[in-house]
Length: 395
Image 1 (tube, rainbow, N blue to C red):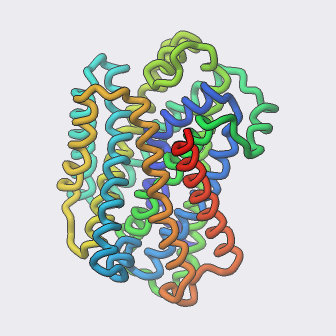
Image 2: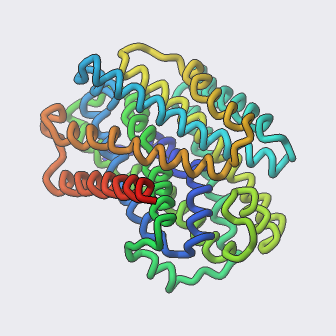
């Protein structure tokens, strides 16, 4: 078995970005343990989806956007490109706002100044990849991932989690329309469209063409790495929700990240609040760099042209800075961005499952059990999005 240690952990950063923080804290503060099942299902889905993405890239030698770019006609490709760009902008919105909030908490900076700093630091992180290669970029991102995990899990050691209620929260169910909106937001924050696109490219950038004789061993290693990376990301996500469910209900304004941080400081102490803020900053920095990489991969693959990562960095950064400058409520903007991402998931997931189960994969096409699980994930995600749309229309 060959270990592909790196690509899945870089992709997993997308699963612990500031959008997750906003969605998970809001869900825990408002509904307690009720929506734990959403994160559990989303994490299991993420394991399957990210493995299929890496598998497609390794077997075909092309990223998912490249395969789609070759197969789509001009009209559908243009429409697909538009929705992909909206996904990229929504992704960066969450990440830049989250980093800006962390800068405000830690250093007292205005949000727009924090957003600019996050953008500049992300450019530096992307320069590491351009100048020093994929391995150096992976090491930096994985280091930030460890900081993220520490920042968001530490608080659990200072609260009393009701594990009985946690177990009850694994049973699917909702509590009103708002819980469906948050579930869609949590799903969009966990199963990220840009991570689906990016993992196929990350695996290719890291390892290039794989000989057929070595393919099965490489794919087995990819399964293990993806499973470990997604378990880590899922643990962090569930820890955030449990922290909010245990400590934040009735603690004041906990529907915003700033309010949640203030409540954490008030109830658990300033050191825990500082560690939380550091994790949020690391989340914003790492995820915005990975998001810019994904945006370049998506647009370049669909157009069959090399799109410089720095250009993509500016294209997605500017709308986020504009929203900060306009004074939009940051946490709600984060949650809405995750809902937008949730609607973008089927456009990445359906082609991925179809292609990885088809003749383009040759002998490595998905076997029936995996195919059934993958299509079940598609039905779950699309069904939740349709339920959300119906509730919004009738509400």
